[in-house]
Length: 207
Image (cartoon, rainbow, N blue to C red; front, side, top):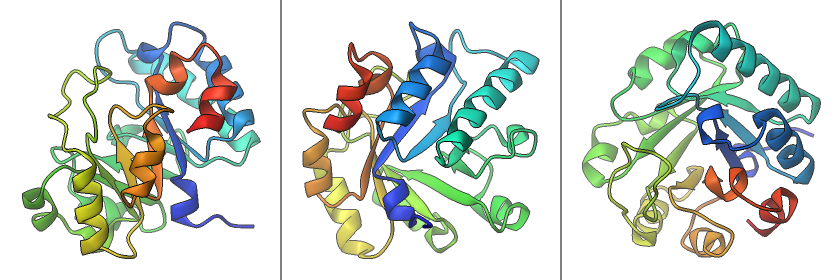
């Protein structure tokens, strides 16, 4: 059975080694068994790996995803797409253009972050497979995160794009994930809700 993009977004885990106090391979393995539906490799920021070490970790994480039939997505590290044989790419507003990426990778999943109406107006939404809306709540995980846009932004996007797959991003934890879904998102993406969880399996189930 092939999952739809909306189903893939339901429990979307994002992680790099810099987010982990434990072995990232063990974290992903446990999260995969517990039911995450997509994984994004985001090796970026203070303390992150570079060069060959980043590639080695990426391949190990990709292999775990393949074993569990979970889509493996890279963030805006375009140079990782081919060597890691990624299933998709997630772009921010300041990354390579969606038009260029869609021409390069016509069959890969492409996601785009949007945090305000101006970004939506200036983005080729028709070329992406899903949008990441947020940050919904305040987050400390990303040093370059924008200020929180609230659940209202999810609702506004859903009203404007009734059929477009939408995933909430930013500050989402098990205790507020349901609110994001009720606001109109198809899924939630999380980092620390899983990487910092005392019980990874329970955290994934609760999202």
